[in-house]
Image (cartoon, one colour):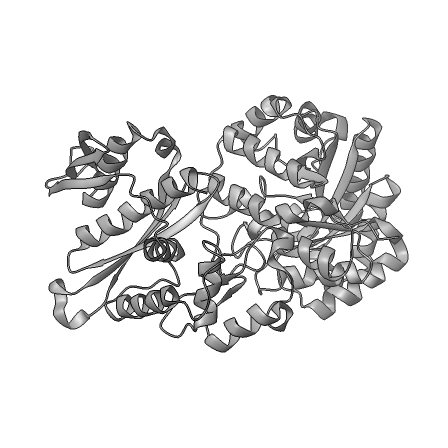
Amino acid sequence: MTKKITIFDSTLRDGAQGEGISFSIEDKLAIVSALDELGIDYIEAGNPFSNPKDIEFFQHFSKVPLKNSKLVAFGSTRRKDCKAEDDKNLSALLSANTPAVAIFGKCWYLHVTKILGTDGNTNFNMIYDTVSYLKSKGKIVFFDAEHFFDGYKDNREYAMAALKAANDAGADSLVLCDTNGGAFPDEISSIVADVVKTFGDKVGIHAHNDKGMAVANSCMAVMSGANHVQGTYLGYGERCGNANLSTIIPNLHTARGFNCIPSENIKKITPIARKIAEISNISIKSNEPYVGSSAFAHKAGMHADGVLKLPKSFEHIDPEVIGNERRILMSEIAGRGAVLEKIHKIDPAIEKSSPETANILYELKELESKGYQFEGAESSFELLIRRNLGKYKKFFELITYRVMGGRPSDDDSTSATAIVKVSVGDQTQLMAAEGNGPINALDKALRHALEVFYPMLKKMHLSDYKVRVMDGKNATAATVRVLITSTDGKNVWTTVGVSGDVVEASRLALTESIEYKLIKDFMI
């Protein structure tokens, strides 16, 4: 029988400590819903004693009925100078009304004496009293053994005695924390194996990524007997982040056969990653394992040809298994086979020897010689193919546009104005908009004008904007390439524009972005 690995997600607590992340109450509720859909066992949602936002969240979480997950509140052991029943932190944990709680306690003697300012036995009592008190209230209790690996290497007997205190008090899981992220996989493996010999199937792992080994350390812990893994989705977290569950889950589930989430949900690994990234307002790194846009991207002609003939020759897993897709990057080194694979998604009847294939290859190389780059703008390349195959519909025409810059407003919210005139069929629409810069103003004016005809564009917005100067020798007269990434909250796509005028290059990319959205909504 496949071994079950309990997955414990801390995106809303540990992940929220990452730089640039600030979850609203609605963000947290949406992420809980996404993780529950994936089938995560436990979702740690915050510390109800630490800040008003977490307190408010726990008051609202009943709005999200959970089908698969249990919510967890996080806190510390009782203070050294009071009883568990009198500790305000523990009272707050109970008031959160979650079925499970996670409690961290000191396992490194250095921390006991230098940070807590107490003695070893008092710390043991703090751990025992806290766990036993919470168990008496009917809670599932996870004991997070803080700094366990550093403590074990410094004083094995003391670190193991701290675990014994939690275990004797009835803790449901003993989670070994590599809090500083400094352990190597071989250390994790040997130490976890030693702990498992004493405490059996109660052992878990909580790794940080300060040496870039959090995923490897988590996997090694499981291979050494741990059956509980904590991490954050997409590896969000303080400093270098936490163990990345969007990598760990498919690693363990697909490569080693462990039961991490319901098997039918493995295909949701990538869609859930995109949803959480969108809510967090942080783009997924393109080379993120499994879920990144480049995770199954092939550019070199020989690689592309090989993977099309025999996928496993250049891919460790079928990308569709985890909800991603193979990408054959279009560039001047792409061969006919790679281009044909793209063409077949639109018209399977086209052959390698067809004149359409040759025309598309020729146009591809001509445009790239002028500065276009389609390996990062596949949506523009799809439009190029559609135009060559007669499978392109023009949904609108931008008749004129004018962009004016000037002195920023008093609150610095606007510094440019754009006026556009568009036509859809026999109707025209004139629209003006202000924005924080000329491109923002143009984007707003164009989309607002077209929303009159295509209301679905209200869900679309730009998520990334990149400008690359193609020839620095020409200074301000140089040709520029603009890449615009857009999303409608479900799909993400990128388009490209090239011109000697940055506004015109942006206009080209922006127009194609809107065209692509409309084609996908109306023609697919």
